[in-house]
Image (cartoon, rainbow, N blue to C red; front, side, top):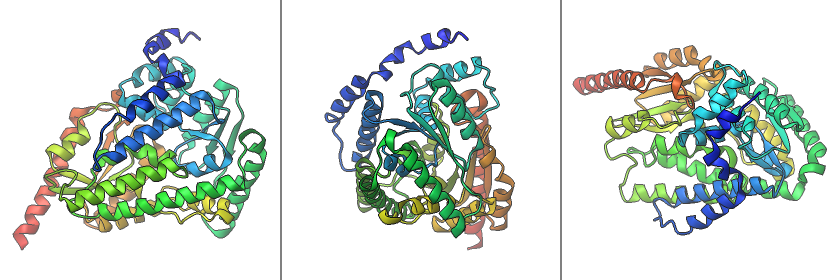
Length: 425
């Protein structure tokens, strides 16, 4: 199959495969002058550059995995995590997703599949991503990720492993999954080199990052909120890949300081905050005015997103695998959909939101399948709910005009409710 026409469109990106590119950019970040309100952005950017430089230089074995796999698992095994779904979001933000999506489509991957996975396959087919030494999929939350990563393993001809995650989350299931991860660590140790000392370091860094994230989430409960949804959903890559590393600790420490200072100086994320929203799932990562218009022009700030909710306990270095297993099985997005609905109600009350927006990413069965239950749950609690259909990566599956129209109508509902409340007072 000839992919050269699609690769040629990406020739200007050939520097992405060169680790020197990231080394130079990393050096340039030291010239990036930031104040305490923005130092976390610099920390996130520098950490991402360091990870890519190390991956393309092959300082350590590269392990491809899917999002919601705890990054601490890969770090503790001794590998460098690379999540193609995260890379797809970055590529989309740079406006380069169409060529990669077309490369996947030319290889007969259906456009009905999730665009995160199609874009990830495009990265593999065009040889733009860091080459994996091993691919590890976790069988929870997303069936498509397992199949997508299996296809990527075929492209690269590397070992492919699947962690089968039990549906239930009891004590027996935690022990079973922990034993599975421990067995995996023994099998991969000759390749990746993880050991007990490394697990202790990963646990320590993970717990520090978790502590800062908890304090950040407390600050976000304030009205007006100090961190916008557009900021938070843009930097979610740090949450998926950095915990367990010193860079993750640094990012969340600087972010906590920035938000604390914003609160103290009365500098909210969005000056005019008419409504507070809870955002479910992800956002469009290709250039789109949707979230910026919603927050900055319409004054409907995303006070919180379900993805940033801390639902796991600190990791015990002496029971490392059990802690990771409990974290995976305790994810509200896994298991019966009512667990997710209960979390949504908890977050609605915790962050005192006026409405809930679920971004229905094209092809995501896991998230979209729960919409009827989420909608009925919010209706029962008297909370307006909007299912906003679109696509996170492929702009062809989303009409910005249509999304803005639906958001405008939703805000009119919120305005009517607020006016009614004032009238009763």
